[in-house]
Amino acid sequence: MKLSSLKPAEGSVRDNKRVGRGQGSGRGGTATRGHKGAQSRSGYSAKKGFEGGQMPLQRRVPKFGFKNPTRVAYKAINLDTVQSVAEKTGATVIDFNLLFENGIVGKHDLVKILNRGTVSAALEVSAHGFSAAAVASIESAGGKAIKL
Image (cartoon, rainbow, N blue to C red; front, side):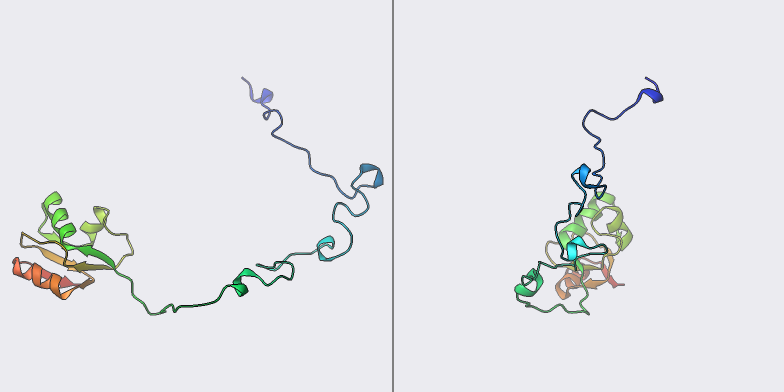
């Protein structure tokens, strides 16, 4: 095989439609754009969401709800997950980097520890937030809850 012998597969490449090149071409005159109207003119571009004068979807559908601009979203991690990470890695200090390395949280997540499950070992857990019950469970097992 040589580079000079390469060519595309049969039927995969089509010639451009040459419009506006005289009546004999069959695509002269209006150049396949129809007669008059905005779409026949050069420089035409439809507005985003324009539906030909019909009431557009974004105006037909009612608005509802409320998006709080100051909302802080936490990634919820339960104590049973914390315990399983501690058992798997053998660590006594559970911090954000350890959770990230084990694929439990993303790089930009804020972490909140919740109380589902139990902690059997004395763990030092650091996170961005804790539920009151989770702090109580961690401290009753002899550990520490450190808020970042």
